[in-house]
Length: 117
Length: 113
Image 1 (tube, each protein chain N blue to C red):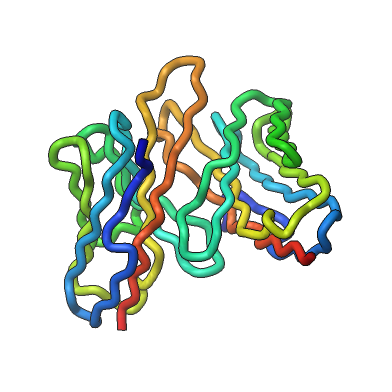
Image 2 (cartoon, each protein chain N blue to C red):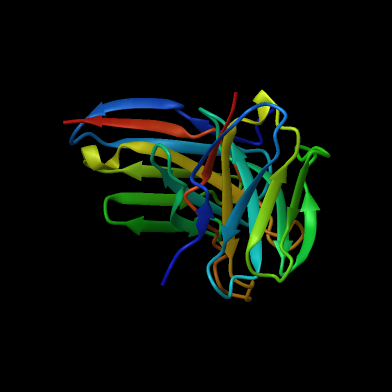
């Protein structure tokens, strides 16, 4: 049984370049979340999907950010025209369908560390 | 303004000591989760609490959810160097906000041998 996987683990890019990250959730988890974490802070919510539908986007997610989950399985997060302020750890999490009486739980991947120079 | 306030932010103790981390909010949550994170890795789920007043134990770790579901605490007994890490609490509103997590800023714990 594999957990949530993310690729790449590390990305160094120059300001102005585009980057794309991939997340593969735990199989049969229908919900997928993206978070961003900067040094010394807890993760901040960016967006989430239920199956292939993107149901919410944080106002932190500027127009330069876009996320997709085309077949309800893996997801990609793209950042266009990267800025130094985008440097952070990008975390993906997944959770199974909510069933009454069961505890809601999210499982995180190892993250993608982005450094914009 | 942080919706979930964790305290203390930093804690350095000797092996064998006890400690408590607090997570407070003015909001009521459907559930609250505690995670532990090591440098360069994603958070690892420790426990989920959903009922006001609930107490859950995980070996030397005891988690409590406040009666009003606004606050929580994590107590570690006889801390060991392996407990070192960043402890995060995260609240969720399950049925009207899709279960997204709102995190505290974390408590950085260092346990010295």
